[in-house]
Length: 265
Image (cartoon, rainbow, N blue to C red; front, top):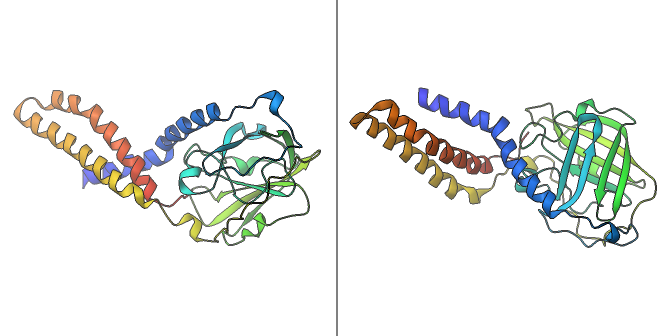
């Protein structure tokens, strides 16, 4: 029971802090991928639809000291890399309601402090069409079923959604900001993805089941080997030899086990 309790506490620590390492690695890779050549920036040129997981923008929110690369898609895997752009909504800077979602407390927690944003605060977004500035218009808390906040609008706005309150899925915190200046050319219309009111956070990635089992068994095998070696040789030197590979394998187990869980928080 002590061992099981320790593993649960370690997993909680991984969720709150260890996931930040995975997100940081993903953000580093996305920054290298998202390169803008100044001479190629053209707001009047329409961009083709982006595949899910591709870097599409850089989002800056100075008041809460956030600068994150935004990926296309709001699925479990995409949101673990950073904020995600809702497919089917305009890209930031384009006409209409551009929508972005992100985590509140795990995987880099990009929107952890979003409740501290104030009306009039600037939000800067850079895409391959140029740099655009938004000003916060309102912050509101809604039910997860109020997906109409993502509906098309006659004005040019940015809508950012995250979970509320922290560590809970019970509500959504929504930030709405108005675009200042001219909008860029719209992306040719693509199929709008239907956003489900409650189910969007309730499904994990079943493909992670096999890797989670394998890494879990490997971590258990290292722990058992260190234990048996300690009984035959010396206890603490045996544990010292096994502790590093055990925690590496445990981290990989936690990464895959977390993929089985809801997108959450």
